[in-house]
Image (cartoon, protein in one colour):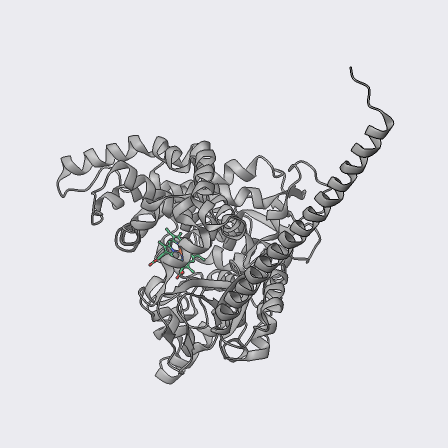
Length: 572
Ligand code: HEM
């Protein structure tokens, strides 16, 4: 190996040093140039994004928005306190439209009574419910086009299900009765003397799912635990993942994220697996009977009887509609009823009042004997449920719509296309003009008292005494005060074009369940008189129990549970 001399070494070190210096000078010059270029592009990009956001924001109503940065910060902060933020903005801007930010998404909020009317009556080509659902929940990616495009489940509910509710009620009640027994009776004391802790939020979804499914898919499938699990959890997973995809995933990656979601959950395939034999049976039924009474009167039959979509009633199509019906029916009713049970458990002075009404109008020994007529006479139970959903709903932004073309309200306010709009349900439901000074306080008999007051006014002006209008009869028309009666001041079931067609079923089931609970159990919250607080994330709220993450057996866990105590069967 040749040895390097010191002079050689010195000269080579010198030349290396020069080379290195030259190289590092060039590199740093180039990297400075490169950094400058990167910096320039980044600044331009940020300026472009800023300008885009500014333009996007500046077309929205001035109320509720500020400069770009603050608006985006506010929209993130609002995600953790949507209820208080909406209340504050509504107080600040009165009846005017205002902009409400939620995790980088901005919606124009509507509150004034006349604006609510315009909003509810707007056509789909101006304010689109479907586009809003697709966009906000990414439904096309998470559940596919067929789920979004076909809508024949709406006439199936409106025309067939509602028509058959009266005759299907005994089945619904029988299933509810069985479900209550299966879910609660083995937990509660049979002696009727001890209080037993029950995590009621785990029980209510099972009872509602079984009862609804009894008239959707019949007696076998409604008791299948795997089917019930699918029917119960579908909505929550679609809503949660849809929102996460919208917030976190860039547009071009969303189809992939949707595929991954579908691959893991397999909602469509599981629904098909469960329903295929039943749908085939109903289809064969339809062909044989030709106009006669079908052997199975349930939602699957009603779907097949509804006007066929473009590609006919394929098995896949009917299964998708069933999935869609579970999507709208289960979590709404579950949340609404859980809220009501928490109100009842924390305000036990209502129990004797409501129980007395149930004992007066309903058969206390056999709930399957209850009829739509006898349930409609229970106006105090109806009122209690309505008051509960008035104050504790599904969230802060109701009936979201995508603005397809610029929309003008009758008061002249214009909102630009491309944005979202929603009803500010909290200030609407807490409006002192509609509900008086104590609008934000729970008064379980608010609506039944209003009905009684109107009745007494009508009967005294008739001069006919009380006999003209027997308390609790169906002959009088006080529908505005009923749970199912929509108005611009009560939008729990929506209003106008998309008014909930399932509200009669939801109301019947919730009234039956509350009456059943009152007739058979005592109920109170773990901490007496304290209603478990609702959980909020983003614009959605849930009864507190959703935060319930410890095993049900852990009775020391301080999260909300209800205490149920079995009563002797016919005790008053
Ligand atoms: C307490 C329970 C329920 C609540 C609070 C509720 C609430 C609502 C609301 C607010 C809307 C209007 C949505 C909008 O305009 O954006 C709606 C629509 C709808 N609901 Fe319900 N709902 C309940 C139960 C049910 C049940 C049990 C069914 C089915 C049997 C059902 C089926 C539907 C359908 C199909 C629509 C869409 C109607 C249309 O687009 O024309 N809902 N619901």
